[in-house]
Length: 202
Image (tube, rainbow, N blue to C red; front, top):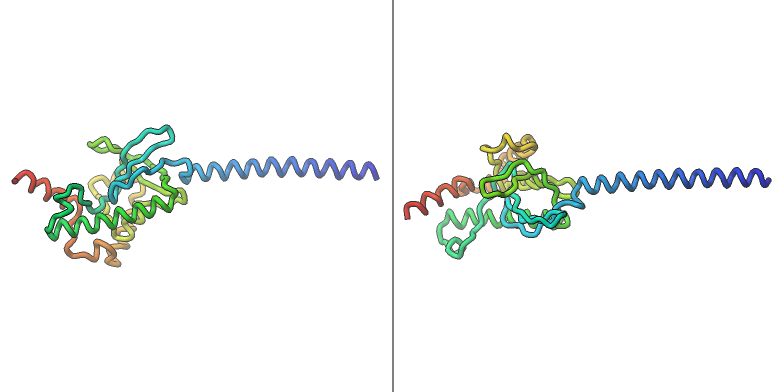
């Protein structure tokens, strides 16, 4: 009887050790998965507009991130722009605010943390990146699918998720969502170009 209880005790001890090791491995895998999805990702300090974030990394470095693959409508920056009565300005800024608010929603949904896949840097020194939330949500894909941005084709060759963004835009265009349903909307890159020409002729 004593021999049997010793064997049971040994078997139980072995089972506990095996289960402990297995649970450690499971926890390690879970931690690694969480790390991949951005729990230790970069902290978003500010959503500047519909395609720009102010971010702080784990080392405390602050930098600006421009969304890769797409271009969102502009927002008003100066008091003059905010008070503009021009229909083209009001239309652009109205869509720009909607895009900015949607990015803010998404960032909050992700606990104010994002995972960046940096693809480039621009002439203003900003990092250009694909941006994902901790649950894997691809922010650019959401904005394009909802018609709150357009694919920016001049740099599409630097966009690893090119197929995803083009499919998302095609879907919004087909369903006439957001800016695709607004005949008065001017593409953000064209709008900026008009603004530069106007400022030169003043």
